[in-house]
Image 1 (spheres, rainbow, N blue to C red):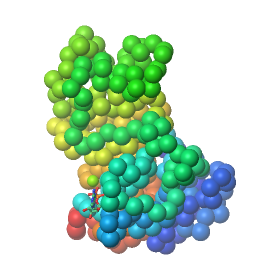
Image 2 (cartoon, helix red, strand yellow; image 1 turned 180 degrees about the vertical axis):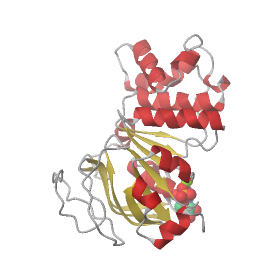
Image 3 (tube, rainbow, N blue to C red; image 1 turned 120 degrees about the vertical axis):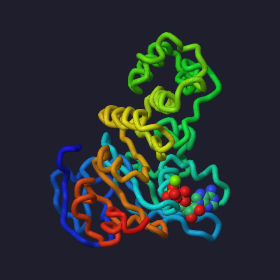
Image 4 (cartoon, rainbow, N blue to C red; image 1 turned 90 degrees about the vertical axis):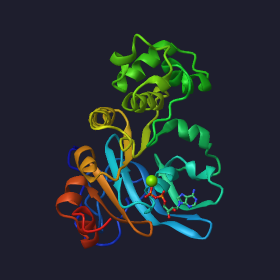
Length: 286
Ligand code: ADP
Ligand code: MG
């Protein structure tokens, strides 16, 4: 868990963001919600529509750097949609339209001069179903480096990424084997190795453990804790115990694409401000 951040009292519906560009470390001037001293992502009034259907409503939240932020909520409430806003994966869905600002290190990723491909190199993504390429373990991890035309020591980078993903010891003697021959849990760690090989700043994970068996789940959870010392992790999970175990901050989305509450994970699980959040967390619905 993180060290304490600048907190502020307030039971409002809204989570107030610090003004972009201001340094709020040590400040306690918030009106409501929770201020974060080192946000790497600032979502400001994000609305997403698929055609005429609105999937996210005015989502405002600050995501702290080098911490684990969990997004929870019932199916269909917009968690994946929000994750895809961060690295502009929604661009790839023709019917999707995004309004509002999404700042990454104070720069709106929706500005015209932002190249989404370059953005996704800095903001990697791991999905629910492990999706290694039908290539060798080595080539899976080297993939992004090759695309970038990386001219350093690729073997060393692959080794570092596999070590970072806690997979090296299991595969170091079989790097030529197909990634598809690994177990599900190993495949997911391979995908995490692939994501970290290009040295991103943020790793988005959309239910990365929900297709795995219990042993693999706990390995992936340990890995998330490890990598959050180096990277910012934003993880969608419908497993509330998992969110409580691994995250520093938790955002609760409820029906209608509304971010109902965002706060320290402990606060969300022990003493949420909103009855609806408490009902969801205690299993009364969802
Ligand atoms: P969650 O990840 O919380 O289950 P999603 O972000 O996948 O929720 O979906 C939020 C809403 O947006 C749902 O109503 C869903 O049907 C809709 N939606 C998601 N993806 C698409 C898409 N590609 N096209 C149209 N509607 C979509
Ligand atoms: Mg989803």
